[in-house]
Length: 415
Image (tube, rainbow, N blue to C red; front, side, top):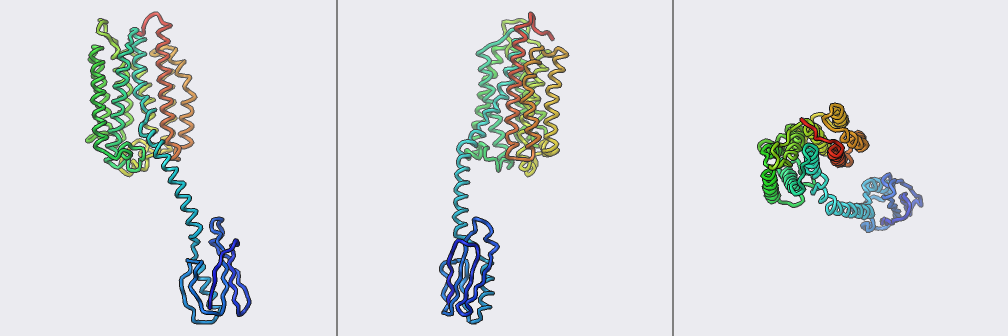
């Protein structure tokens, strides 16, 4: 007895026996999908059975019985094991190739951009610019050469912070699945660490030069404290970020310490009276520290699961992403409440209040974006970049306000 399989365009299997001249129509449930439309027709004749050639899913079986009902029963059983691998394999292979091409595009462009973290370097620019503007408001002092030396040094130190953070997170496994990690891209932990500390040394040399020019030892003390906070934030044996203390350390390092230090870096040895640490610079530094901390806080939304795995108890791991989205709203409200409070108390001049108030739309965007996407990893990743925009725009507005206040005031603000 011979059975022949052939494919057609329908999704119904028809089996016909020559003896009874009857046909049985079987609808295969596996053929409901448009991708699985592989119909088969079987014609069974009373001749010696040969192996099936066109349908690889059928196994060889010998039928000694001439009973057609038994044959049909066995064929139904075999049909349930039909996998339709021929055309499906082509479709799956094409889909895999398409996914691989997309992954290559991501690895060549987006991952490198994320590894560089260029927008994050606003955390080096904003404290320096605000501190310089405050020094100009207070005493009319500003050195262009010193400003750019400090900017270059700050960029080098922030690069050390980012690279060493990638290295130590690689050691703990926190960055195991982080494709944009520099260590994962370069493939060398030791090389990345050497480059990081080389940049730190070069950056500190620039800060030392600026301190010698300014002649105010308070500035180098504050900057050293800021760098030490960055070290204990991420480096062993401290790694205080794993205990949920990263945000307070970030606030202190970039706010009161760094911003005030850059303000003092614009002192001049030719001026007998040193720049005073007054309410204006302290108020401005608190606002800068708050916007900087918001960037760090929002950068954890998309990696809560990875942080839990390595026991990195960030605030979002402790309170959850939903509560974290509400905390972002509270932080934004606190930022602008402090701004208007400082304005009413005359710690900050009126132009600062007006210019910073213009950043309210971007602040509203941060809040709405986080509230809508806090549970979507693919989208919430962008939240920190919205915070970077707010940080940069708010810092620029604050600096412009301080400079404008100097232009419209006859004397500097006294402590």
